[in-house]
Amino acid sequence: MNVNAIMPIRPLSLSRHARPASGDRGVLLILAIFATALLTVLAVAIAAAVRVELLASRSSLNRMQALFLAQAGIDQARAVLFYDDPTVDTLLDSWSPEGEESLDLPHEVGDGYYRVRVYDACGRVDINTVEFPTLLQLTEDPAIAWSIIDWRDEEDSTSPEGAEWDYYESLPHPYYPRNGPFQTVGELLLVRGVTPEVFFSDQDRRGLSDLVTVHAVSPNTDADGNVRVNLNEFRNWGEEAFRDAMMARLGGALSEYDASEIWRGLSDLYSLGQEYTSLGQLSTVAGLDAAKIAAVVDYVTVESGALGRGRVNVNTAPPEVLAALPGSSWDLAEAIVAQREVQPFQSVGEVAAMMFDQPGGMEVFDQMINHVTTKSSTFIIESMGVAATGREFRTLRTLVLRDSHGVLVLQQKEEDWPLPPADSEESLAIARR
Image 1 (cartoon, rainbow, N blue to C red):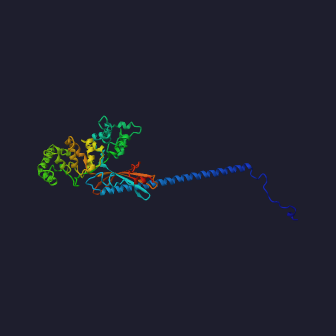
Image 2: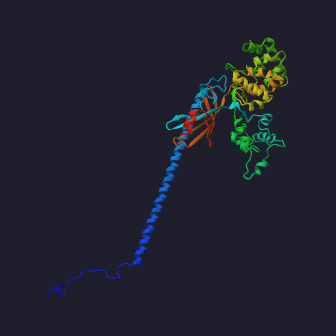
Image 3: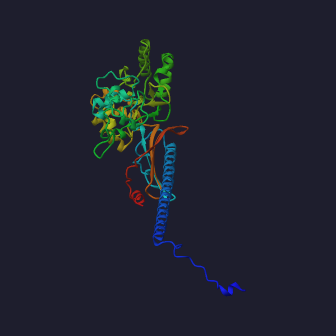
């Protein structure tokens, strides 16, 4: 018998009890929504993280581009300094911000640009060699002046107004004074009493940041670029040899009698175990009047070596620095500025002639002559590179030494602030991009 004929086959179907309940379906829906939301949040978070990383990478790239542009400005300024006439340095030179062809113009490189400014370090006071009277004139505060001297001295100052170790130890974040030469101008902000108001310049006054430097040397040469005659090198030569050497170099300015008198002064000092320590001592030589001294002072020196430390270039220094020099005054500083605007000083002799024209001229000469020059070897270069975006920038501040072999970098560091606004319309137009 055929069983299929008796019992027909029916399609199988799920029983009512095997189907998911409506409550289970709701749970599954909630889990699905939660999973979708979680994946969405993760996707957004990952996208945000990737965006942050991209922005950071782009910003880092732009900052690096700005840094390379700033370095290009440093290199250009070094080239300009190398080819500049080293026999005299003035604010009319090609490196100067006040020169006819100022470097402080935006130099476009690709989509970015750089600006560069050069300042004469010898137009500022060397903070590591300056003495108290000049510091007092610059700061107008004896406590600050003594604190600066104490900071750089190897031993604590004996002045009651000098900075003390216990003061720095008592600060909320204590530190010790360097008791050595200043390494950067910004280090002055660590010195007791040097506030940002004293350090930075504003529209009404120049701060210490624009009046001092940590290193300033100038060529120990005459107006023709020849090494000066060191008076002290002849003390063992004898009078005749000394006179012949002086006459060969300065015959047009001195007589044989004058040269012999200079030798006698040296002999008298040498017999006492001394020597010429200042060109101001020429004023004590018999027969040397102001005119003769002014004629020869550029050709002689009391220092050894090809470079002199701490002298101020009267052609580039601001009035505040000129007035603060030993023996100087505001009247003399203004007279120097007025004269150099007409014709820059070509030699120290020309400066000496102006000193002698002042009230108490010989005393002014005695105190001031060892602190001035008309040429420089050290310069400060500030270069700012701006990336293609126009937002990221980097600023480099470099101290360089110029000699016959090139322009050597002595110190370089990055700064956190931009250069002062450009003055020209071309500069402003590019800076607004």
